[in-house]
Image (cartoon, rainbow, N blue to C red; front, side):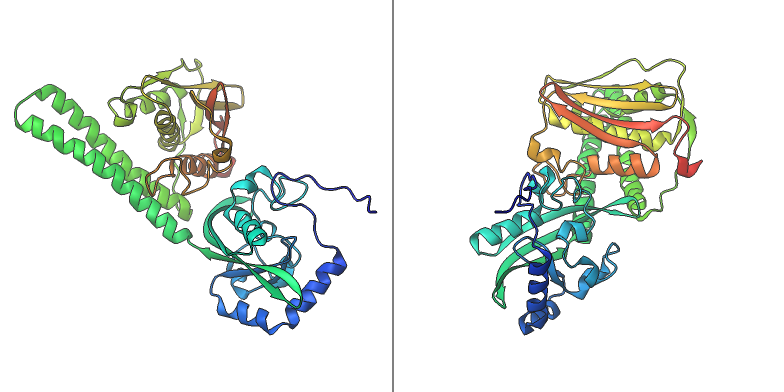
Length: 385
């Protein structure tokens, strides 16, 4: 009887095949003409897995991924380990065994196919680590069972839908926001034309016009940020000035209707070297998410704390984020909202806040409420000093 310790897991079994068993499966797969036909016929990344979810064959499409050096290098690894998923090492058991894996489309498809023997499809939102940077990719995952040389194997297909999802998200969010704002602008312009409530109409038109420009600028910045072409202008900024900019954005904003945004007094005589525009954009997205998460009558709070080295801006709202959602908050294209194409707010906040402002964007959630924050160095991002 083996005394080998069983590794803990929060989802899929953690155990791996022995070296001899893995070698035996690899040999059977290499010798099979079925494997060759499978690998050559598929234009997407195709992985053949043993019952322990280790890769025993892969097609050349995997070499198009910037994190994979050779097919041989991924043999014996699990999919998330081969693709450098940020959660592959979260648990001692590796890919498939952490809390995050419960919501991974690839892991879910593999287990479903192995359990039922039926093909299973799911969407896989993957965040991979590349040269120290985080990169989001979306895949259409499909898992099926096949028997080769007496071995029961799982064939996992990963079709990269990143460009399609990214374009869809950008187009849908852009059109949704622009149409809403332009609609409000048109309605108030008609009121002004009719000579009714002229002062109120003029003020609302100014606000809506500013929102329209901000929304267009946001999407342009997001495109440039993802491409790595965003120019960041640093300046010395008082935190209170940034908080006022964000507060003004939501004065009369539809998402704030029936909800309150309270700003805690910022620390006095504190400044930070940062991009005023990008920081305001990050906080605007976090506040917008907070307001959208609460019903009318509730309050969202915004403020900041400072030390000699850091400034932490935070946004807090009542309510707890469900556990199934927590693991996917910062993934591009993921949203708790029903509209197709939503899901850029938290993703863009992390992209702007970490890659371009040198901060750390994070959140905590529990029965007492949910708090998002961006922790920034007071002297500005080291990469731009």
